[in-house]
Length: 576
Image (cartoon, rainbow, N blue to C red; front, side):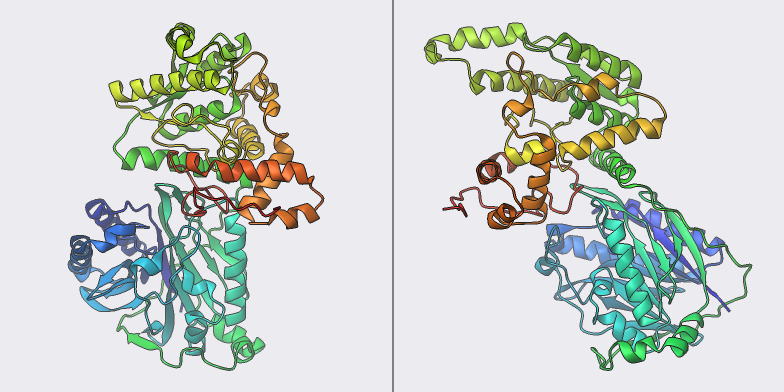
């Protein structure tokens, strides 16, 4: 007889217990209506992930336990086992999975492996659990793990399998970045195969500050094959019928558990028996959502990140500078998809150095999207600055000072619209610019949110091309794609006057930042030493700018911020 498991791929909001509880109850009811035996929620679904220093507030912890009490009351008439991710608290706090059935708390499992790398700081907040936990229903054993626990080869999952768990549940809050799901799926397939166990992996979905979670919950059979997979970035309940004897057959035939590791990493396992009948049901077909391509995923990640940042922070509309370049064009397009074109305002702010073509491109894009726009020339404002500063500047030659004044005038105007009308100001800079400091502090960096700050320029073009493909028409026009990138802050300016070609620059930046390759290692790969020193100096010298930039969506392995914490005061030069 098969057991039916429901995975609640939930979009939780950090600290919003009322909304999160409402969603949890709705998912439980939907699972009951579909005759599910068990419903599994993501990691910290009740609290939202990551709650960060809210964990240090005792009221937040009390409210979490009150939320568990509410779920207990709600579950009294529900014939379904609930595995709910939430903070547990006594004199310490724990990242836990609560086991609930018919109004009774059967206990909880406390996460044993706490990640403390990349964007994760769980050792700052939680005490690790000490013992693996499984539940037993009608001789069916299901192990419980939380996120990082399943990534550890000789961790709790191994002991659970060796203690007879035919199904291993994993509550997860695993953030998205480029091609992350490939790494995640390969790990889960390996783990299922080596343990001869089903793995039911339930991941959270949605945006939370700099992070986006792609969902992509999945069920892997004991042979390491994907049986069911949920879509990217879509909240929903996904059901699967599992034959609990399939792992036994796989184990008898291949003996994987016996030969994978003869020692038991954790000799004790907490077994929670639950007296629940598994009824016969009309079988459900496996639903397998094929993985979308890399640049569609990035588009969806930015869209969800914008949507949730705006919605969860109480904004309705956005404003930004629309230059006619590829960066602001992509931001305009995805923001329009995220919150509706009627909630998007582009400010076209030409100066004496702006080309006629750029203004035309910005106008055409606005019309293609159906967004509101305003044309506010900045030449007169700029001339007033120059006249008033003429005496102080003492006829010194035109340089980046005058260039940055133009950018800061535009930043002021964007922020004026934000203040006057309550718009969220979006900054439109990319990762290549942020890395090298090719951006103006308090100018084009001004804003409350920076959607593409973790997208390299070369990838930005690919996402923009994919955007047109997804929509089946040329919204971002050919002229925007073909023009040479330029800030247009002086006559005939091109980005490559200051930066190396983006194809070379991004390749080096990726290896230096995302992969942490050293100067010597890059030199050994054949890059010119003068070019490397120039790029590395730009990266290191502009940490002070990045530290003051708006939050933006994590899209790569090593985003600026929590992922990469470098000192501002830093004189280290590896070539000296």
